[in-house]
Length: 187
Length: 100
Image 1 (tube, rainbow over the protein chains, first blue to last red):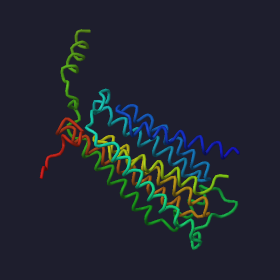
Image 2 (spheres, rainbow over the protein chains, first blue to last red):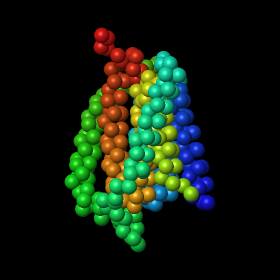
Image 3 (cartoon, rainbow over the protein chains, first blue to last red):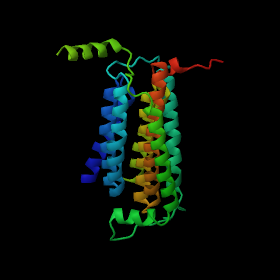
Image 4 (cartoon, rainbow over the protein chains, first blue to last red):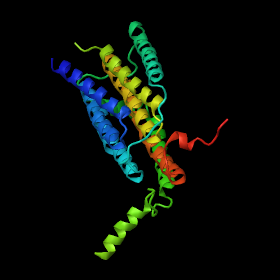
């Protein structure tokens, strides 16, 4: 009963918040709704017994990715509404719906075959974090190290790409900045 | 009770929302948001399959997807900042320079 209520609540809220993310004209609204939807997605993971994955989702997505987006949003002018020349919405929804249908078929295909068996089955009586650690550091050690290297490369790339000429203002209206500076000087 | 197909249907709905976003958005920052939506949808599907087949492989793949998403955001936002410095806009129609 508890799981039923939680599942339907989480799914309704997540779908609604992601719709706001996709449809909103304002970057700030889109980002806040995406942040809260990601918190709710970690709720899905806790429901599914993947505790460690839920915590990682909270730390990495809600902590790091959203913080990075909000910092980037400060460089761009986020208060203005985004003007977009949209393509035909009916075509977009038709294409999106058709791909969703294909996706459901693809996902439900293995459910009807009984040939699936667990490659790394979960051990009984062991916490999820310990179980994940055992598999991650034995069977998936090389992908783990490669992922660490990839994160290092991404960090260096981010610093090099974003770091140049950061003392200049990025936004167009330099006059407003100058006015603020003048006000500060007169005070 | 909640079965595997419930989770997969929710995941498919969220994925198609992200796909609609990718198709209709013209702003690069909003395109990034839509890709994040799609990555999260796939993570839900992986966690659900991992739970219902009692197998840890799905969770492993979800971890690596999260790591890839984090590095994608780091590099992508750096590129967005460079583009914004150069063109003063993030609209794809303004950035299109190769007209065939």
